[in-house]
Length: 534
Image 1 (cartoon, rainbow, N blue to C red):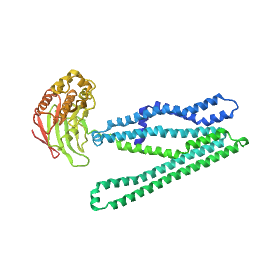
Image 2 (image 1 turned 90 degrees about the vertical axis):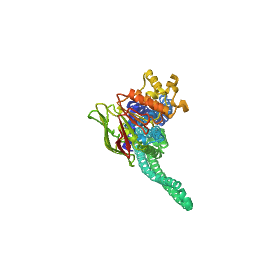
Image 3 (image 1 turned 90 degrees about the horizontal axis):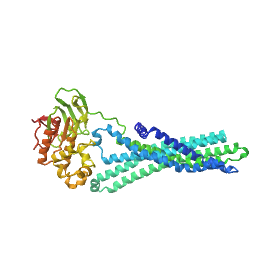
Image 4 (image 1 turned 180 degrees about the horizontal axis):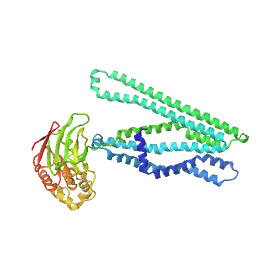
């Protein structure tokens, strides 16, 4: 089990609450202990000539203990379901933009569900059988020590060593299982390779050759799994043989040491219960290890426990009127060709800056670096502490941003939770959104999808512009948010920048300059380098 997995399990327990986890364990231990006393209560009840109400109550309580333990188990199961996901989700705050950029939603959902499933199975199945097995051995050892110390000692030695051998063999078998899984991986790789090269195979008439190769891999997989299962069966036989011999020794000791050579009924029942409940310990512990392995893999794939990425910006004192300084910044995606090459320039306080360039020239990458969403491979981005405290003081809006599946109102004011309704209706009118949002029903109760085809890309961009104006920051970045606007809307957007954002530094990225006015500087990015246009 990796350190990240150990840390994750501790964090889930901490999120549930130490007192709640301790209470759950105490209740579970009491109920399983009560169940373990069942053979003792039965034997005492049957051995007395008169009905003993205490033993009768003990029998009744022991019979009810397993149904009763389902209640705390179910409570803990649902707590693990919630908190196993919450802890993974909370780790998102340490992730940078690139983390989400390189993952699909489906992959993230599958990994989170796999993590939650593994944790629930470990708690509901793994933890329960481990607790029950340990409690059975401890309780029965105590009862048999009362019977005779040698009988108790032999029982503890037999079943304690049985658990040890089962755990040891399970760990060895786990390593073997990982090896045989490689044969399945080879088979899967072959099938992928076959489909990728089907044109070559068909044109060469080599289907029969590929069939022979496939059969070789199938035989290799069959042999590997057969040998591994044989090893598991050998391990099971060895541990069961040890338990059988030990049980015979306990029976012999009990028969020899009991006055008159007669058995106490509780001894017989204890041995029957022990053999029944502990017989499959090795296989169940192997399944427990496999669940831990699945949890390990899923946590590693989702990036849990990875050190947080250092924010790519530094807040220092810069000479006025510079608000942001880009120094010798280079950037490339996944070891590819550099998108930006040693870019250096200053952005002034309250400046209106237009960045132009062809598609794919690096415009969006540059503003993401300025906004602190990406880490430069070389160089640094500096903020003037007089105006900016962190990347949170920069508003970033992109044409690729999606709207939430929430009301128009919630989308417009995000991330605020409330806003002056008059300010909202004012922006609705200014941006000509009143043909779409006509009343409070549209604003508060309808979602973007409810408008159907009426909600175009241009309407989405208008809504993002309205959101930005309700959440003004010292620096406002607009990355192609005017790309789907018509000529009239572009003119409205220009007026809003001029009239609503006088106190902000505005950076606009655009591949179209028609209708854009009021920008003091225009810079162009070409071949990863920045040049001044005007």
